[in-house]
Length: 428
Ligand code: AIR
Image 1 (cartoon, rainbow, N blue to C red):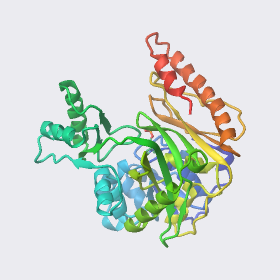
Image 2: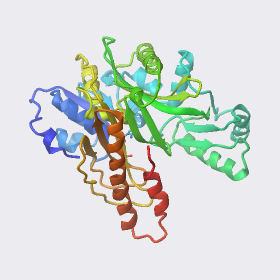
Image 3: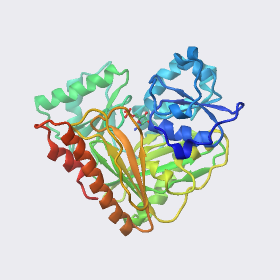
């Protein structure tokens, strides 16, 4: 990824503080860009030599390149863009070096593991859906699955505690009565999760009226700023669209206040430093359940790159480096539409081109497009929800044409183009 307009004139001074970022995807890129603006030098602790932050990092000496441990030594502070790498990284580095991590190792240990996260929520009296851990040492998986059908007669979701994101590591068991093929599918999923050195749990399928997300940033001093509560639409476990502030689109009396209270409690009880995101289910009776917490910047906060005075990325860097946070409030409303690889295409892709008022494209420049892969996103702003929805319709149509081009380009007569375009053709 290279954004010539924003990266220019960002050369840090020779004695600048060095910030290490664990991971090198789009979240790392936006973090690196914000940190460079705040005067940091960036070192990316990624095993991927073609990570997305190359234009923003200091070229490390070649002997350092091979070792994340050596790179980490050079950093004053270390942040992570992606909890999947955390456990392995902690093993690589000394206890002393672990002190450089923000949020702290204790916080990452709770929230980087979805099972621990559920247990922590329950222990702290924060409502989330019911769940049951699978004890691989002592329980038979078939018996356990049968038991879950009784525990959750309306269906359940199996989740890996580690290694899941963007729809990976999640498996729906919709029918309580498992036929043998269904059971095999669930057992295969459990097996894969256990092979990843994590655990597996079942959680109740929730009949929600909508999905909401709240991004907040907490400083070490306890100062906290909230981004507006947003409505999110997930497709196949992947975030597709975010709209906000949610209160401008739906009648959600008291819900934003409740979400902020929960966020405040999570931040305070865990002593979390930095930006974090909480995904919620809003039930039909008005109950707000925490779905998942990400102890980092999040896709549902990408709108803040073009709405408000301080992005989730900048506030994250401010928080972890002891700077005062900036309030992100602004007028108007916004949407964020993810650009996902279509189901039938694998290969190179060019950015979509579109001229639309209030619309900004963020194209990540990934070398390969894969089904469901996040290739970029559009941010859209408007004065009011009506105007926003008009623009969103135009944007959505443009994205559908772009997607169809890749479906057709593949030249596969059997490609299920209808299926692919249908998933892009949803109206919001
Ligand atoms: N990411 C991390 N957790 C969830 C998401 N979406 C971001 C991170 C990570 C990148 O997605 O920035 O590095 C991985 O994207 P991909 O397309 O390589 O799987």
